[in-house]
Image 1 (tube, helix red, strand yellow):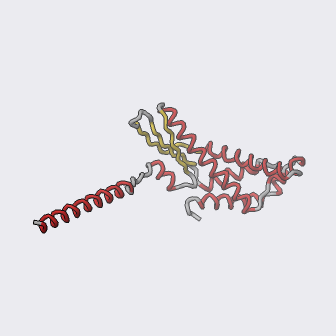
Image 2 (tube, one colour):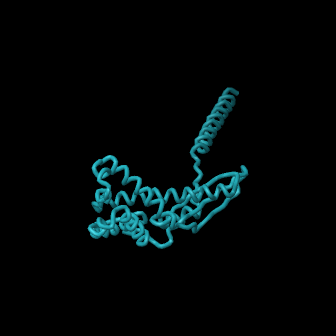
Length: 204
């Protein structure tokens, strides 16, 4: 009788331990689960040619507002990328066009010159993105009543044309007389900015 009771107690203990262990494993498993978020087709399209494309996302209860937000974000991303490339190209090519400015007061103050150059780089980027167009859009109606819109914008004429446009905008920052003297520097800059733009997509 005692033997039967001992066996039963042992079986109960084993079952309890197994139940606890199973519960613990199930809890650990549930907390370690991850859900992969797939990229939207607009994101994938933009990332295929990041040198001339950019994507943006907008969410709003108003569909038009969501679309506008997505487009604004896409163009803002491209502008920031272009501004960064212009800055890198200037450093790597050695072009300092503000020093060739006819305004001697600004040229005499290094800090003002640097600030002026940053402003001009931002202005150049903002002018370049005016040549971009929306080439792809994804639209979703969400359960909470909002609209989610993805937009991809593209500079349709390609990297070489973008580099040429940027160089022309940089040339406009100096006088006609100085521009003639700096033809070699500007050509060197054009090649450098094209190289910088191509780095984005690995087309070096």
